[in-house]
Image 1 (cartoon, one colour):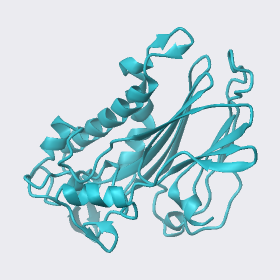
Image 2: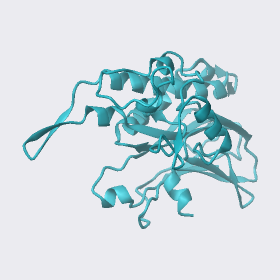
Image 3: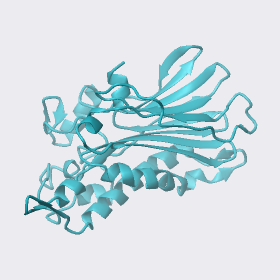
Image 4: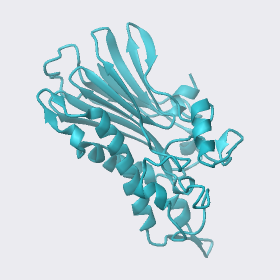
Length: 289
């Protein structure tokens, strides 16, 4: 069983950025081999001189427990950078990650709560951000709002023995190769989904040009604070920093009143000898295939 992360958006393929292998000892399940490779490719952001907002995290949590995540930032790298360092930490501290014989107490709940808590922690950090400015041709430009409104999708595969738990928020995907055939273990969270469109509109938001408020292409994400205001709070908010915070969502991320959410969709799969490898990749790969 392997895991991979790749990104391609508007660019030609390049050699893998790094290749590695984690501990080959699979514990009590000899058909589960944790070997990992990561790759990134040239993309439209790099070509335009903008920072790459893709991130990946590979971790052996303990014997026979492995966690892999791909993170696809947008509107700047702030959220992606935060998740690269904090998403796994948020998941690991959940009660559901406590060892229980050769298993974990409740990996599914740990992923759900870990995603929510990472999102709320990032939103609070952005609310506390001090004013940020840059000088352009001698003119001071306030970029605080731009930094605070960054967001990201996320997809995590947690392998516990021969059980695979997949969490997804946004449009990255986790695909399993079984007997030479691909099996998609995630659903894209965007307005193309009738369920997602109905959920967003029921919360009082508008879908314009197949985007949330005509801007955001995904319907679930980390960050994106301006899209997490409820209808009662005034809906979409892009005011200056400090003007307001999406307090309903911050105080209760389970609320259905917020159009945008980091509520992870969880898939559970038992790994079998016919399962060959696993691919985690951001949307750029899938839209070019």
